[in-house]
Amino acid sequence: MRLTNVAVPLGLAWSSPFCRWQGPLAEMSSVDLAVDVTNRALDARGFDVREISHVAFGTTVPQATSFYGVTTITPRLGLPGVTGPTLAQACATSAAVVQSAAVQVELGAHRTALALTTDRTSNGPLMVWSAQGTPGGSPHTEHWVLDPMKWDPNTGGSMLDTAENVAADEGYTRAEIDEVTLLRYEQYFSAGPRNYLVEAHVPGRRGFSIVGDDFGVHQTTAEGLAKLSPVRPDGVVTYGSQTHPGDGTAGLVLSTVERARELSGGAGVARVLAVSFARAERARMPKAPVPAALSALADADLTIKDIAVVTTHNPFAVNDVYFARQTGFPVEMMNPYGCSLVYGHPQGPTGMRAIAELIEALRARGGGRGLFTGCAAGDTAGAVVVEVTP
Image 1 (cartoon, rainbow, N blue to C red):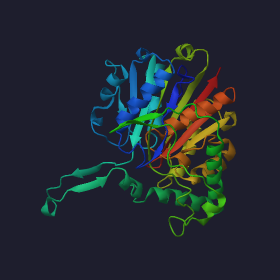
Image 2: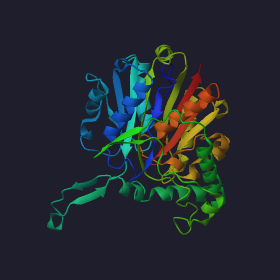
Image 3: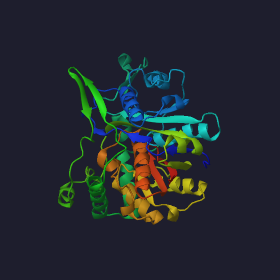
Image 4: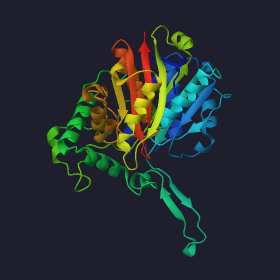
């Protein structure tokens, strides 16, 4: 989908720190987290929430009261008369939320919209469905977070299987996978200030504790990666070269290009040029970001040669190896702040954080065009193309 009049005011894309599951955000509802961090992000930037007339909300893990979606959030943001949809597209949820909010602006239905995402994989719900026809009326159950990782109803395989299948298709070696993994960790630890991170205040029995940094990220070395056994005995993916579940929230403000320039206070804008989605062949999830990216680039009348920075949601290092090989984009020019492979994967907001990082990386360069792309369950992916201008 091509977009011509939608932009993010620079400074108005943010993320909470991401925390490894069962860490400091484990007991905080992701809905409460989204409200807490969004209020703090908008306040710190001097943004008048009355500008917002529409909210697109993305979340994939049910929380208490999340059935009511946006209507439980907007009054707590000072927007009691504002509503909007609740969206879920697995790990492509952020791209879907950006597209949904951007369309409202592009078509003139709303001048300024909030795209907000949040998820908590910690303490994920156990879903129970009654089944009176079973012996003793035993219910069917599904662990909402864990079970989908192990079984895709379309293929019968796991998420890990998709990575190993692509590695086998392309002949990737363990050494190649580990090399890209180490690069991502080095980028994460050598990155400059993460001005897009907004601390979370977690309520407790003795007041609030503050989470200001990512939790659960460890220093990694080539020697340490080499010592890890593959998850599957005959595979190339280890627990070092795949992501971990996490908790977090992220969001951004979208407006018309003219209004976004005014809201940025002279800092400039990140124009949203295109959003697109694609699906790869069965059980080949790490391939999907490539067709999604090429589709979004085509919609924006661009090629990969026009792109200065790429950020990805890569639950497996295999994803980035495949993307670089297929597109020719240098692997070292991807993910300058690290990526979900390093800081974890809260599902819904993962892509939104990567978009915030993309905008910041382009801003640090003085402008330019960038691409976010990331895979999702069901061998799908979403992609967003942006252009930062002063």
